[in-house]
Amino acid sequence: MAEPRMTTHTQTVLRALLGRSVSGERRQAVLRTGLYGLELSRMTDLPNGTLFPILERLLQAGWVERYWEQDELAEAEGRPRRRFYRLTTSGAEAAPQALATATAKTANSTGHRGLRPGLAGGA
Picture 1 (cartoon, helix red, strand yellow):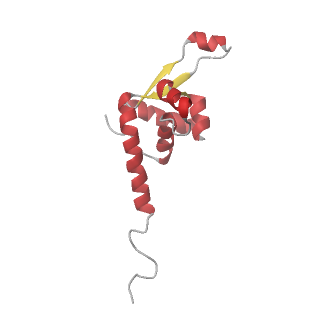
Picture 2: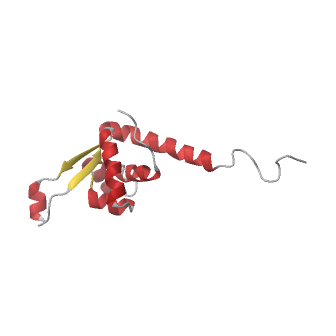
Picture 3: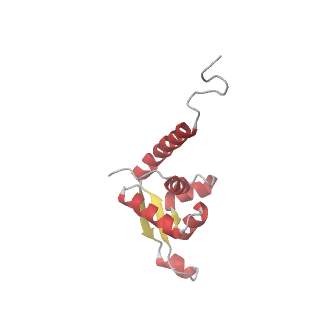
């Protein structure tokens, strides 16, 4: 499957799904169970109209899977079931490399390309 476009927002979503904004046991939980939609929206500060199309593209690329939580958990807390999103094995392998490549491209495109002030053209 084709690699998803690495927009800034896509990178933000992938970092969240990789658990990069949390640490310790919480990070392991994110990697194991994923994040539900509202939680992802809050972590990334992305509106639903931006977040869910990104998740759909990641699903189509095979990097993310989605699932509903068990009815019993939601009922015990007196709320509707949550839909979770988590990285697939291939997504967990591909995402860090894709993020590194995107970060390098951004650094190269905003860098000075080896030019130093005061040395151009002259004396």
